[in-house]
Length: 208
Length: 208
Length: 208
Image (cartoon, rainbow over all chains, first blue to last red; front, top):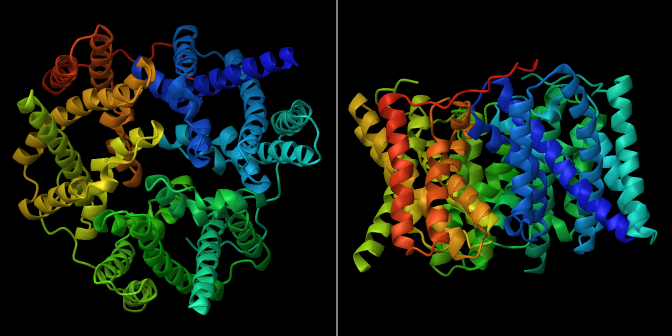
């Protein structure tokens, strides 16, 4: 169990590092300076969890522990120094899938452990997994990840729902969490590898 | 009084359903999938009230009661199934006016009842009535409702001000609330029917 | 010391007025009405401090004291009445530099005084100084101040860091705060006068 706890902590920091790096990427695209790199990395890395904590009235997780911000800044520095090859981008896509899946389960778990009912707990998982990227895109003045047809919110929703469902059946948190993580990751992997999509709105489009 | 309380509750859910449907519309415009429909409906439906609750340090209203999110998702499902004819859009415009007016008064009432002073309480009414739509537009990468010249913030401001003013005169909350609701709805109706506008900034426009 | 306390209060309101005026400017650019002027002035004026207070779980500063909102609205009224000449714009640029510098130090000071550790306290200074403008730009559907190459976040970061560093050396808050203010203002002044910039990302730009 202790090994699992350590694994969770490692996954937590890894997810933040990956989201932070994706924020730094947004800054790199516009040739920004190192300070802007750090700003985008921090906002993207901790943004989703920050919204979750504000909504469920928990202390914002990165205020009391400086390590979270340091991880974001390290990710920004790494992107700056290592540059951004095609291979790095592919790697990041997969790391991001891992981070998203981890956060979908982790966000739902944290909310559930604080007494949030099932449906809002699922929403917390989705927000934790996706909102860092949403804030990153808003700040970068780009269409948000929500507007891409690629499956991203859907796997987060599935992962959070699997966790909450299994947790309601009284399975141990680690089992439910792992199942939620795997469900989210599997669907996201399918979206990356096979370009899975959900059918779009079939009705008449309303005028602008 | 009980009947009025029930009316308030019904109005509360109706406003959320209408705002949720307008969020789903934003998703329909871009032919998104059902998950994105739900996401936009939820964010738009509960966004304004969420900001209000965070600012006045009240528990976020939809965390403890799952019904609010369920109403948003039902609205998203209804838009998906029923499609989006011209008649539906007209109906929604009027329902949105009802919801906005109800929320302007309700937001100011909730803030006042928690001891918020008059001027910030008016702001809470305005934010509750308008910010769901603002967040919807930001997420959809469209110019926000604030930037349209149509009267929208103004009726919300009027409704919240009327409530706070009458409340300061010690009128019963139901009377003040109803007056605020009617004031907001009347001006918004005028904007819809007669294209009422306020004069724009008359001065020289500063350079970009 | 009392004189210094008064100076801080004056600086606090002055910073809000200046940020509020810059919000009204965003509304003036698009010839909006007086209500939208007020909305933008309020959001820009109190936005950064609001985010800071939410994150560190302090009561949002403008809820209990209506004077802050009144200052924002007065700034909006002043921009409306006085119009917007070239001289006014130049003046505002310098007032904004003063406000930003004051808020970088003040935000870090408030966070530190509430027990926030050094690194997050620096972030609070940066957010207080810059996020009002970020929200203004997002609402106005313009690329945010973060995306300009001009030095703006950097002086805020420097000022907050100087404050936190000197405070860790046990210097009195007024001395640390003044040093932080001066550091931020000096670098921002250099950016205005001499167009100082930081080097942009030197690596290959990733594809969009």
